Structures are given as C-alpha cells and as structure tokens.
Image (cartoon, rainbow, N blue to C red; front, side, top):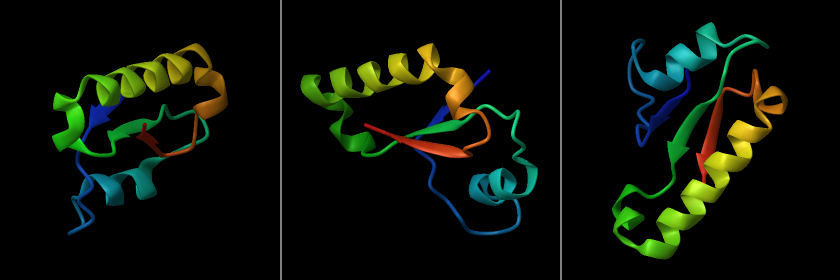
Length: 72
C-alpha cells in the first residue's frame, strides 16, 4: 500500500518526513506527495498527477526505497 499525501511537515519526531527517514528500507514503497494541493482544482494539473501516479505504479519496483516522490 502506498501513501498519497500533501503532507510536507518536517516538524517534530513524529512528522511524516522523520518517519520516512527513520523507517524507510530498500523494500519500502514510496510516499507520494502532491506538489501543490491547491492546484487540484485545475483539470490539467490533476491529469498530470494521475499520469505520474500511473507511471509510478507501473514501474513500482524502480521506486522502492526512494522514500518520497513528489508529483507532478
């Protein structure tokens, strides 16, 4: 299961970024982060996000262990 989020919080020992840094392994699936949540209202931006997600899922083996990926 992959996480799709807009969370970029790096504050505190329980932040998502801190957990990624501490718990990520070469077998871990990436955390996919939407670059600009406010632009999801734009059709073209949503399409680019969807296209990128499809690319990631279809080639998931190459993204294991990377930690976080930003889309688009």
